[in-house]
Image 1 (cartoon, one colour):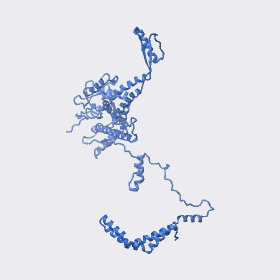
Image 2 (tube, helix red, strand yellow):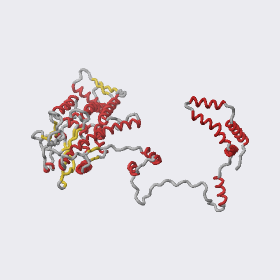
Image 3 (tube, one colour):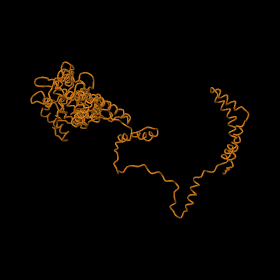
Image 4 (cartoon, one colour):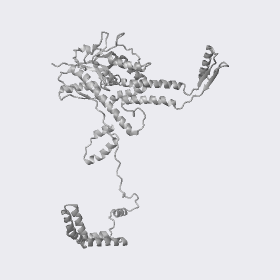
Length: 525
């Protein structure tokens, strides 16, 4: 007998349709599921942060989850880079493929696809990615009736403080209730775990990684603010004698403070007040440099790189490499989210509407294809000449070009250049003169004495006799040679022989060419 289990491997208890139509994770007045939140990040110190992190591991993660929420509200840089990573999934299109070729598998895939592409569910992806900071997120599926079936009408983010982990294994989630932790109702929740690292789920969130950077950066910002308050102000040093009373000392202190604010004060004559100019040599750069350094560490921890968030040296090449790192992290997040949706969304639809033997569809977020437009233009020009078939539809998709409508003006290639010889525009020029000029331009150029000599030699058959005789024998000898040494010997023997018809023909041709060059004679047909 096949036993159905939940995402934690526990046997599923049966649930009725009426139960699914009602919300389960709702706040309670004065109960354990309260909307009121603590603020553990206020006045945070290293011992307190260490206690919060240890408490999340062994007992209660409430303060850790509240601390993670506060970091997103108080640290602008952390909120920015974490928001970038959360929203990166929105740039990908969800793809749902049937588990097999049966009609039931296709129907389940269509049902899952319609649920995931709906606006109500699509906008909830950012809530599921809340697990990146806190290590897990919970969204409750809102079921609606559709005829005899149920469909997912939306998803509602649930405060993670309303859940707690099993203290035995640290992996099972229970819903907090006044009567104690309760098992989660089947087919009700989408529970997403973001595994930034291996280990206990509660230790896989980025907030645990960023907590220490947030703490030390806050110390720097606080000291920086104090420094800026007194930046450039001179030191007011008041001196009082041994006989000065408490009232005299208070008067002197008040006067020193007023000089910094009102630039005017009075003191008794027997007291001394000295103004010492501040000496500052680059101290203000220390605070800014330290704060920027912690911001860079946060960028590395959340996005894996700094080029897309911080101005660094390296140019376009470094930026492209860092962008690829960010894409790799986005694809890994998408793979984890796809597994969650397949288990909780597609699994719930299957259990409610299909038999157990129907396979779950495969859900994925394929990365978008990137094409270099310049290279594609070159491929469009040279590809068809080489026999490559390119789809016009694909070209339009790459460049986001729609099919032109009927009667719409379209771009056309430029008309070919007109012939340099055209009909005369001036009627006084006779047409015969134009045609004669055109025939002279089209006529071949006059031939010189060398051309005439070559024609004469070809006509007399002298060249052919040479080719059939001495040259033919040389070619046959070279063709029969077995290696380069034999070829070298054959050519050397040919050069050492007495002048033959070939050398005689070349000598006469060279002499005729030189005479023709000196005299400049032309031979007419």
